[in-house]
Amino acid sequence: MSYADVSTYFENKGTILGSFEHKETGAFFEYSVNDEQIIHEGFNEFVWVNDVIGWPKRYAKVLKTVAYVITDEDEFGNPVIEKWPIKNHRIYKNWKEN
Image (cartoon, rainbow, N blue to C red; front, side):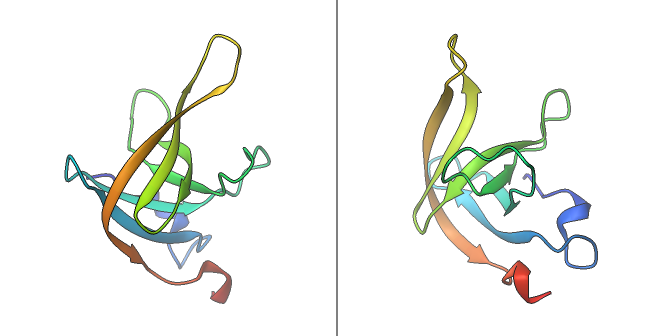
């Protein structure tokens, strides 16, 4: 289970968007708005992976049945993108309504 950071919830920044499960592994993830200055084109969300050693979030593009997640970068500095099949996609609330 990978919950978003508490700062993304409604009473704080309110940027939490929803959650999903990885279709093949059943792993649960929450995702929020990418509110950083660095935005890879089309990757407007963060998927929270709770990597306590590295970085707890990944740039992502979450669609209805699939999520594209930047998991690394290659030797030339280009993003390595994984395509994750997802299920049980839940949208919490439009963060702009807060």
